[in-house]
Length: 112
Length: 115
Image (cartoon, rainbow over all chains, first blue to last red; front, side):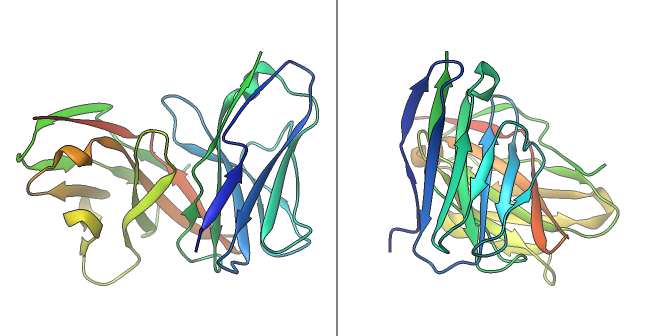
């Protein structure tokens, strides 16, 4: 099993451009999460989903949108990228809300 | 507010030496506790977790951690470090709220290993 995969691995955007990050998991997990990681800080939750067709805001949701049209996929969108969104983005999934979260390899995004 | 503190930003040890990484949390009840490791360019891998029961938890790669309620700590230990242990280590607290396990991460400790 691949576990949690993320595409792309790297991306450079100009301010104002849009893009979508894709997260896929093959563990049939119900819950999926998007985090961002910034230097000197731990991971912070952007949005999460408790099942197909559901999404909810996390700690730092502003400037991001998400969709969970299929159980195995969780998309993170930036409609108008800003330099403050330069970060490493991690996706995670878990079987239930109380279970261990398993993380993908990350996407490094730079916004110029 | 809940928080996780990892007091050491960088630690350097010699290969074969023992290791202890510190983690303190602020939370009213006993939370779920985790240690994750992140190798360069990689995602986070779970080393071990504590939910309840025995306060000394064994994990992968020879790591263990001890939960001490009186000190609000969950320190990670390894008796003999290998060069491949060089990575960044994150302590996290899981607060089950709103139907899911909200993870609050510490800022991380970067471990360097000298040969």
